[in-house]
Image 1 (tube, rainbow, N blue to C red):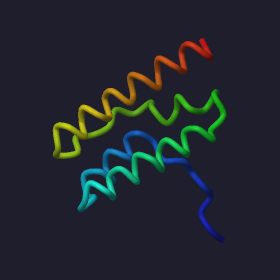
Image 2: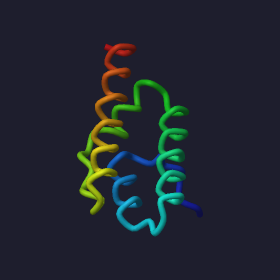
Image 3: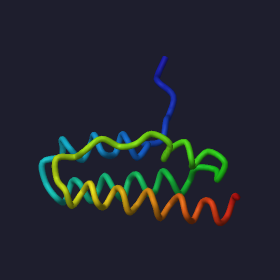
Length: 81
């Protein structure tokens, strides 16, 4: 029996970014996270942002994740809360 689908969380994205070998791969991972986030119901999107992501080893990617989390939570709060 196969494993059930689970969308990528921001914390998991950070882990993937830490091990990605090219910038192109990293951007594809960010795109994949955003697509999965977009298709999640509004009530469950916060779960994808709940855990603090670990460091990626690259300050600019860490800054991007922090900004992304802040933006998505602000939008989510505006629409849900």
